[in-house]
Image (cartoon, rainbow, N blue to C red; front, side):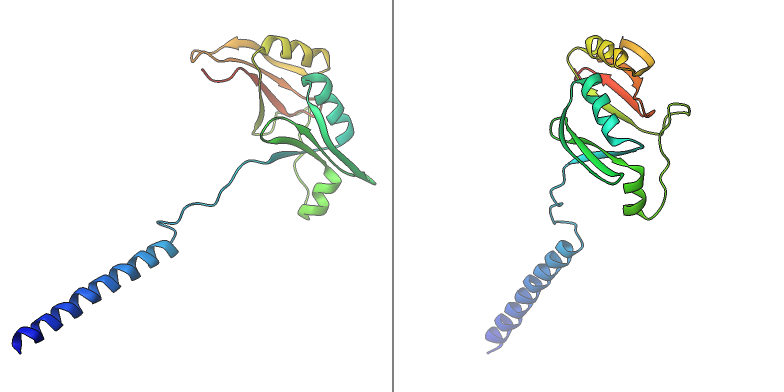
Length: 170
């Protein structure tokens, strides 16, 4: 009888350890430790500008990008350019104010650039640089090969946003 009682107690202990392990696994999953992260990708970057149509035209002429979408609802404008996996988009300051319920700091060619840049990757930085300057981009730095092997140039668009032109990383 003692033998059966000992087997029963051992079975209960083993079962409780298994249940505790499963509960611990479920708790870890709910804490996000073993859950896979949600699938996230960069869809588009939106820059706020005074005149969306003029900015789209500038980017088409300066960088050869194609217009994907444009809508203007009485000054509340939005437009997108095809740029590969992620799109470059522009929204009017009026639309930003409506959606965000606050004013945004707009870029300006007369002020220091905002604390970010748009990087456009191209195999021929000097050619795209020359095209952009001809279209009215402001020169920040001419094309130069960096120590890591990438060719890079900096410009500012008609609204004052900083634009990097670069070759793919080696």
